[in-house]
Image (cartoon, rainbow, N blue to C red; front, side, top):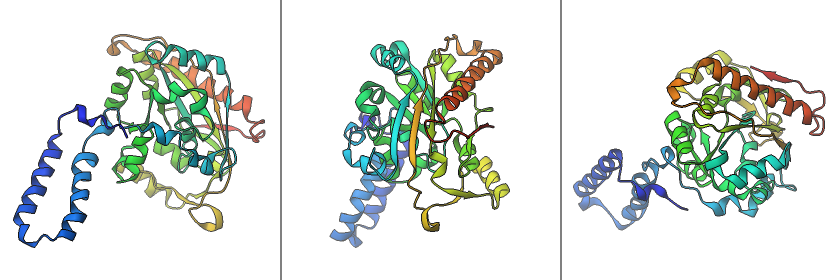
Length: 328
């Protein structure tokens, strides 16, 4: 993997941790065995030089090979556990975006719904459904925003960053756009995750306007994306919803109660169909402090209209002809 942390000095937390580990090793030097060193040295190296390196707040550490790994097709390829496919509402417009590149035609892809595990939006990160083959530079020149808590899980953190994910904080999002990347976001976040119900099409977007303001700040077009099948992977429960909503609000962590096949965490083998809309043009306003609430509301309303139209246009062909998009 390409680790861009080498372009940055060690963070204070890395230096302090490294010093503490060295001090502990010196103090216990007489007790250390070869086995202990063999176990602890790799863990210490990972802790200091990977887990604490802060790359999730910069440009991450994407590993292009992983995005092209054909074994992913066994999970969500055309013949995988999850049958998957992508429908493009305006493929020519996306090709033009790719031709110009993010310096001239930057885009923010707003993906819905989050679902319980948000597997569907991974179709944009990989070649499982052919997106990378069709739009290679859109995948190479983009970063995905993911919840901070997911990047705190050792191992899973690396997997996400190898796929091009970075922290979803505002500062990181602005940095990614300033650096000239396209950006994928899941605006509904934890709130939308908690709204997930089997066979219900729900999006939490009415109060999500931060990504719209970012689009205006950088003149980035907004691309609506909807994944049919995402909410049918699991059944969910509303038990203790009040307490779980409190935890979500105060601890920034979603705790959905869910079950899949045989009452286990194994998801149902649904068909995932992602529909990608045409870019909604956004006029840049400079400086950012000059952006008004009225401008944000106008662009936000245009995006919601585009998302709804995309859903209604393709729901029948995706097997959801009687579905109604619930907007929260």
